[in-house]
Amino acid sequence: MRRRNFIKQTASAAAAFASYSIIPASVLGKSFGRVAPSDKVNLACCGIGNRGGSITQSLHKTGLANIVALCDVDMGAPHTLEVLKMFPDVPRFQDFREMFDKMGNKIDAVSVGTPDFSHFPISMLAMSLGKHVYSEKPMARTFNEVQLMMNAAKKYHVVTQMGNQGHSEANYFQFKAWKEAGIIKDVTAITAHMNGGRRWHKFDPAMTKYPDGEPIPKTLDWDTWLGTAHHHDYQKDFVNGQWRCWYEFGMGALGDWGAHIIDTAHQFLDLGLPYEIDPVKLEGHNPFFFPMASTLAFKFPARGDMPPCVITWYDGVKNLPPLPEGYGSAVVDPNIPPPSDGKLQIDKLSPGKIIYSKELTFKGGSHASTLTIIPEKKAKEMQSKLPAYPETPSNHFKNFLLSCKGEEKCRSSFDIAGPLSQVFNLGVLAQRLNAKLIFDRDKKEITNNPLANQLLVGAPPRKGWEEYYTL
Figure 1 (cartoon, rainbow, N blue to C red):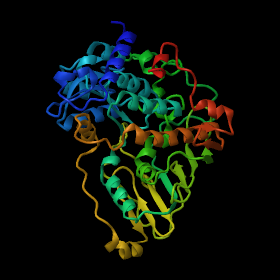
Figure 2 (figure 1 turned 90 degrees about the vertical axis):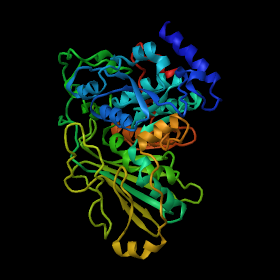
Figure 3 (figure 1 turned 180 degrees about the horizontal axis):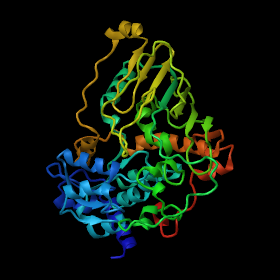
Figure 4 (figure 1 turned 90 degrees about the horizontal axis):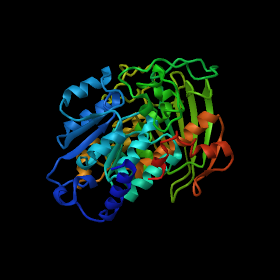
């Protein structure tokens, strides 16, 4: 069956059954992504090296998944071998389209642990086939792609989860409980910072073109790696984490860490989308790759009885935010996964946040790190008033798989993670253009910069990759 016909027919069938509750897979059919509570989730893993490999292993460790397919554009490369050795008998593919063609009826869910720009086509095809999707953060590289992913999740009635792990840990439950109890209220400003030495390049900001091409490794399917992106000759500085520094492929430090730092504040303070994004400082701005240091101000309007709020983002080793009196030592979460090239280097300040309300100031780290009230004297005064919060019933990976089985609800589903990712999309546009952007939250348009408004959609996809924008 031709792949496009297969996609259309399967998607139509999935839509017809979308209103049904969870019933045994033997009745409804595996191709619709429905999983009986007694079954394990048949999981296909797209991206099995570096971070994608960690996701594959974490989902497997829950005991709730059968790994039924492995897909990576660089099978046989050193960073994929660990997972390949773990599952020697599982079918392997270098092209996710071929994987779905040959194994679509044996797959319930898909993990997507690939570069930022390639989350979109894999996730869209999976959802159109009725497959549940776990995608790394941020959801996609452009504002419009995130919107299409949110629409598809709703259209195809699939379970979705974005991979910001702290959204299933203590940080999530504490923030929710403190907000509901009125401890966190009247927030007017948030400082979010990532000042570690996790940089992905040392290129000269004065460069005038992309680096010259190199021979393609024999194990790599370069054409599939490029996906929807415009053609570039292979370059080692485009792959294996280096992709993050290029506007063409990644979302920089903001896309990498923003979801681990801002996520709970964004959700529980109902921030939505900003009306203004201001690049206060960009060190080493150029058209190709992200600055070595950035300060971005995101302005959000009043929401209900909550006052206007400004989030100021700082990245860069020396671009440290101002710290309030009584800040104390930085918050460090020992569970933060290290980068693929080794240990996360922290010079002065660990990734985290400072939340300013009219009465209280809070400090917190990233991922699962909980908040504390500062200064210490005020924390002691408030101790008896602080509500307890529950322990997590499931980590982020287990939460996704249990949701596929109908036993839980994903905490970072695309309808929640989408607007957060779009905040980052807008921030990246301000970085890329070095321009203040005025955003109409209702129309979802940039009103003061025609080029930036066009870039909400982005450049047309490479020829042959258009269909993912119409699924």
